[in-house]
Amino acid sequence: MTTSESATVTRVCPTCRATGLVTDDTVGTLWTENGVTIEQFHAADCADYLAQHARLMEGAERARLAEERARELFPEAHARFRTALQALPTDEAGPFAAALAELVALQARRFYGHGGFVILPEWADVLDRHFPAGQ
Image 1 (cartoon, rainbow, N blue to C red):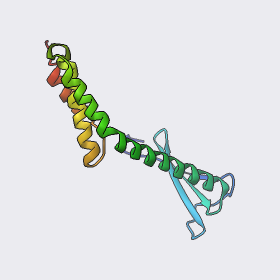
Image 2 (image 1 turned 90 degrees about the vertical axis):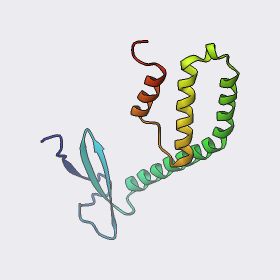
Image 3 (image 1 turned 135 degrees about the vertical axis):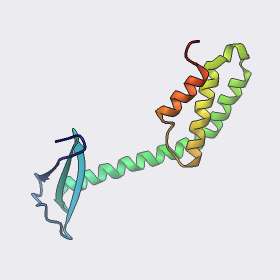
Image 4 (image 1 turned 180 degrees about the horizontal axis):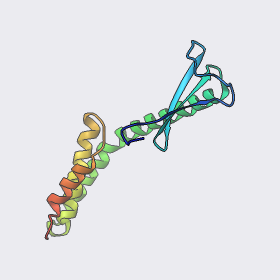
């Protein structure tokens, strides 16, 4: 198997023993393990599937609440950060504070724009600007 190919394995649910036949009374789940796609079908009322679905919904709710909390806390925390940074003498703040300020501002724009995180290439560009090679 080459790296561009991927295997799919179908597993029988040990609880409901649902087959891979899709009907109005079955549901399918997919996940990956070690680069292999696993598919498993369940009866719609299967206890394993219902527990898995409940955990998924609980995780989604925790993520939603964390996002809501962050949206409430971030503006004032970011303002305090900027105030503290501006209060530092320039010679003490140096490139560390400048790089951190730029990264925080970039992440803030992402957060309020369309979500997402500052990705590694952006980190590298910011750090390279503030800590150029050879210095």
